[in-house]
Image 1 (tube, rainbow, N blue to C red):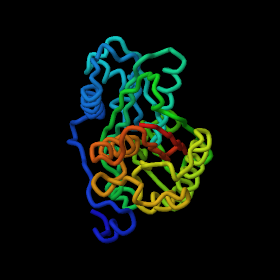
Image 2: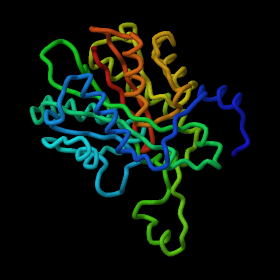
Image 3: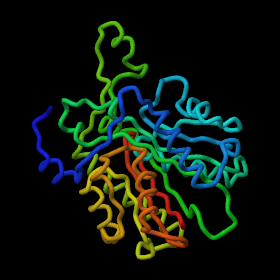
Length: 301
């Protein structure tokens, strides 16, 4: 479809495969399946969920929120819901929000989801983006514990002055009238890859350093880093700046590509199932996405 090759893609991104939904499979369906698996793993029933947080930039509709649709699909009758639009940092924004609500006593048990159907917003004639993105979902059940484990610290940040480095120009209310009148509009994901690379490495590094310092943990104590799976070069550069060897970095982007908000929970789940960390280990998660937004969270498993 575009002037590229497998060698070019793998060398520059590390991506070998991606998963793409059926055209009639909505974001909410992926989210619901991920939540079902997370609740089964946690031994939790639908009625025990107090709050549902979904990070996504590919909602089923502009209104209502995708979290409301998922709530109905799963019968989460006792749950409040909210969507979070923080692009690739959406899951970590949700995890930090869940942490705050639980610590405040407002909710007891929260489900956090990162889910994207990026195939619905990718222009497959644009070589800069079409080789990168895939569809996926990941979910986590978060609840209070009195043990010395869990979320040890988080850092969230954003900078809207760089919004056009990674965005969808149209589809919102700003240009809606012109789009309707002229039948025009650019509804696809657009990215300045070189600039995003520089910001991503710098800010994921800075956010991770802040989280580790707040928790009183140094990078040598981190058993595994689980970064946003965007590009192998971004991951390698960030790990190097943090003095974390690649043997302690989990990567699965070769199978899934960049799945935005879904990439961190998807990688965390696979890393756990592969035995890459165990009870008492420190796991550092970090992500960067459109907005621009970025985040880091340190957990003690």
